[in-house]
Image 1 (cartoon, rainbow over the protein chains, first blue to last red):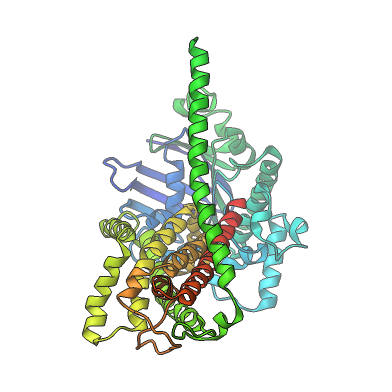
Image 2 (image 1 turned 135 degrees about the vertical axis):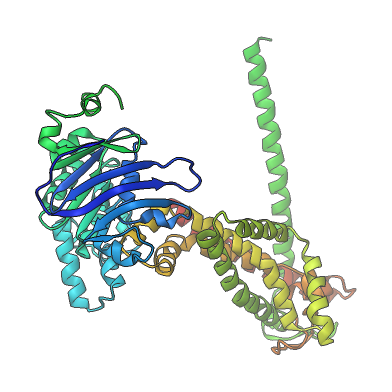
Length: 261
Length: 280
């Protein structure tokens, strides 16, 4: 059984007895996993490649459903409802739980249209409202100053770090409650990485954040809670400052001291 | 001779042989283009663009009827073929993916792409021309649509597949429904590629003669009624070039030149779009 620290904050998400099996696979990639996610804090998921951390992250907005044959079991509670039920409206779920990907995913359109995309999907057509919210989202994502004179330019002309911040602006523009980050800095240089990390920390006042990372220093720098996963199971979930100093599980200690992984 | 020297010699022989082969191929291409341009430009005059066909011996004979007929037949085929091809390609890439039905459609479309065009002409003759009792522009357009369809379908499928799946995921993650992801994100990302496929498909059918001989046949005068037989540059060229009259043969050259320039233009525009896409 996993060692899970008591969480005193309200919970943004609660994973209960969760299993996930990819299409065509015999064994589940995530086995009997229980995990609370604290509200308005940052939870980092760490573990060696193939441990299931990205698979778990992609279950929170059910992006796995794009590919037929993937199977969920157990529960993921969001606002008291199990989002794994077939009746769950996925569009509504994904508006509330946003996602930032490993590689920047700027759409082939202008910077302005990228940020406005999610709002337009929700039927917001008023020009001034769009303009105000795009500007605010770009400011919140710390990229407004760099792009304010070229909002009509193609977003693919931006650098990788700028594109990633644009994607964050696009995600926060629709005011989600949870943001999922899937190794958001693995394709970026150190300076852009520092910028994104700073931004993630600032965002936690408004959203609950789950971040998957290969980089243990990054988990230690930004997160409040860290979950260590191994072979599809959660080994330990602890307060970050405690877990990196005094892990309770032997496996966690071996991983964070670099004995494997 | 040492081993190294031998390798260098073999290397040189292969290089010379392959360069020569390339030169021979290019030589024929420029020879054809040269003859075409010389004879074609020699035959060109204003009357060709303003006058209709005339019996041999008349001086003011032109190709207006064939050019307009060609535009009608190819235009209507494009109107049918492009939406059908793009929608079918969209099904393959976005909905069918690796499903059995999708794989079968891909295989059949590959086979259709290499089907002799005269067979397609004979098919359309059997299902449209014979029941109607006469040749018609519509029949010609249907034949060209069938030839164009697999080209546009496969390029659309391939080009949509090139759009990274993370881009689709990012749109879905913002709460976009599937049809909006396809229209607003995937089509936009594949715009240049799809357009290239369309242009190459149109260029391919614009040069077809055999299927039109069986379907739209010919008319020596201007006709814009698609229910009636219709002239096309290709069939007119075939008739005039094989006739014994020198002035008709000249008109045949002019038709060949005009048609080649049209197709060359389409191809060049298609390549420019492709280059622009790669340049990004």
